[in-house]
Length: 133
Image 1 (cartoon, helix red, strand yellow):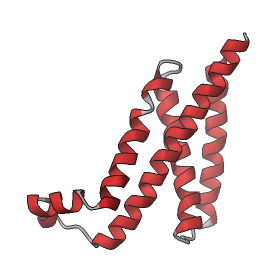
Image 2 (cartoon, rainbow, N blue to C red; image 1 turned 90 degrees about the horizontal axis):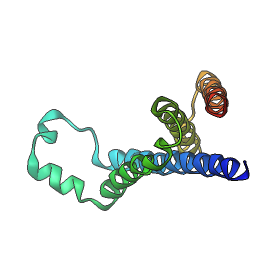
Image 3 (cartoon, rainbow, N blue to C red; image 1 turned 90 degrees about the vertical axis):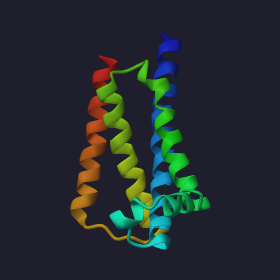
Image 4 (cartoon, rainbow, N blue to C red; image 1 turned 135 degrees about the vertical axis):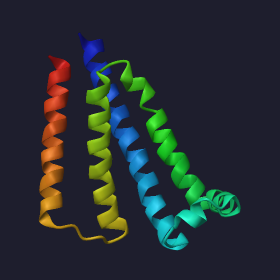
C-alpha cells in the first residue's frame, strides 16, 4: 500500500514537472516571438528564415523545452488514463504559464481568466480523485 501511495506522489510530481517545463518553454517562446516580430506565411515558408530562426538560441531552447515536457509525459501515461493525463498536463501548463506570464512578463489577465484557472484546478482534483477510485 505504501508503494502505491509513493507511486501516486511520484506520478503527480512528474505531471507537475511536465507542465512546468512546458510552461517555461511557452514563456521563452513568447519572449522569442516578441523579438522575431509578426510571422507571416511567406516568412514561414522561407526555408532560410526558418533555419535561421530555429537556431536562434531562445527559439531553439523554447521548442526544446516544449518537446521535453511532452516527452516526459511518457512515464505517467502508464499509470493513468491518457485523457486524465493530458487533461491534467494541459490545465497545469495553462496555470503555470499564466502565473509565469504575470510574474515575468507583467501580463495582466482579467478576473475571468483567474476564475477559469481555479475551475481548472478543481477539475484536476476531480480527475485525480477518479484515478484513485
